[in-house]
Image 1 (spheres, rainbow, N blue to C red):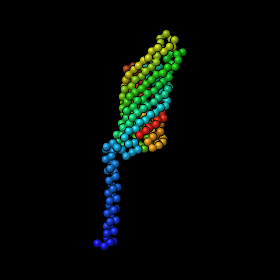
Image 2 (cartoon, rainbow, N blue to C red):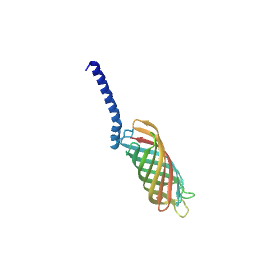
Image 3 (cartoon, helix red, strand yellow):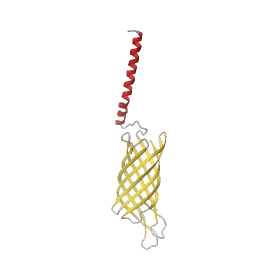
Image 4 (tube, rainbow, N blue to C red):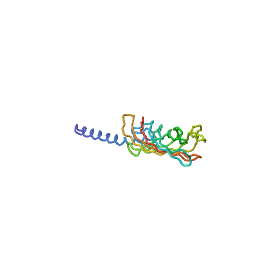
Length: 203
């Protein structure tokens, strides 16, 4: 074979190898994703801390409605390139007056929930969760003096739905905005809280 033939043959072989390498890349990605090692920016675990304001109202329970603060702490484990399996603690604190002349008291609604967070786009996500919850309320006495002497506690099932967006990302830290609705179904009645929060995620 002439020198020119050797050059042409070598060039064709290199081109074929390059095409094979490109064809193998999606297969390698699929293998990584099958082992829960996604090729997205979120690799294995993600921890999120969120805080903000809330509004709460109830059905069948007195002195529930009011404004206050809300917080959420959750851990996420990569399940697919777009989804995280989550475990979280979320809750709210609502200020109210148990009686007309009573000092401000605090009612708390919280839940421990397991769920799923799904990224519908690179930065936009939705999530949901189910678990158990508790509601704790400060009540006044019955003689009208307004002294807080009793606490009511109710337990029940907890349900949560939410959505959020990542606003900025710095290496393995992101800042975002999110909202969620937490509903507690107890024997005494139902409590529903809507919250709007700023969050920080590490992954």
